[in-house]
Length: 421
Image (cartoon, rainbow, N blue to C red; front, top):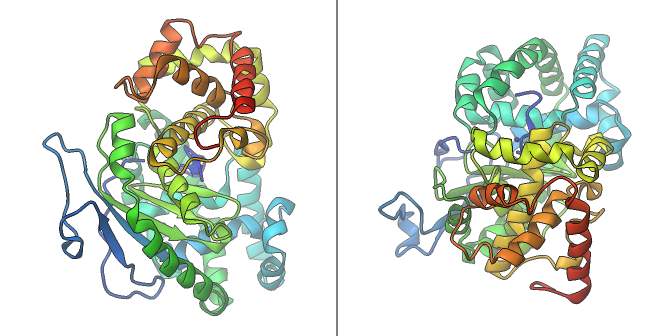
């Protein structure tokens, strides 16, 4: 998942979605068991003594190792279940049974709260569960009680989001009042889930499957050292070598970046290489400085490209990326993920990339950048992704009127076969 796709203060889906959708310093979670989670098993990749979980840093602050943590999460499953509770057919395709089980118990007050949240996400075009997960993540919630406590005092969440890298200060300041206005409805729905036994249902029906997948992935992910690869491409050190994956049955069909080197992953996909690609994708959000005015001045020129505008304005809003910043973020992250996946030897075949199977084919900037990267020798040039994009715009190789032709050139590359095919 995707300023992911994740995207995602209530309206921030800056990757993800969320995200998709951060470089907030990840708080270290306790090693003892907690009500809402299963204690993670962790491994450090490329470290001399994995059992000691050393932090491997270069002199410049870049990491040389990856430490994996995989665990179920009651809190994120509760927040992601908000999507289905709205009754949207898009989500009921995944959670019809659970929707009927819980929604049938809703009081008029709860139904009104759900309706308020549904109206807001439709008006402002954000993915409800991913948005809430991003906002609550800095508080490290594990249970519904934790979420309710954070809702009572949201100021620390706001302060953390300002440091998260998910959006500019101005953007977060503009959108935070919406979240505050929705807090009463959020609290009502959380109290409803708590009263109607959501935790007991989760423990009996969801947790066993998530635990089994977590155990499988802990062993399989250990050989992949993704953090240094992401840092090299972006030119920025991540806040931690520790990558935390929270499994969420109710997160389908998304993956979502939350603040820190953490993300939420749906459980339908069990292939370890797919999880590694998803990890790379979420760690990349965003592969540029979201506050860099030079970068935005460059990519904003693409607002004058009819091919780009048509794909942006007509895409399925349920997929997220409904503002320009989120759309650009996901397009850039998609192609940056492909570069790193090729380097790691686990890329999806190019013939399968950036088509209608990925967010309905909306991200036409991604194949254009892929073509330019091959022509320019990127990422082997030593440039950061941000610098590469700016240079392509400055040299008029990425310019209004050229995106459709670049996409057609990408289709020719697909037909010839490339790395990963």
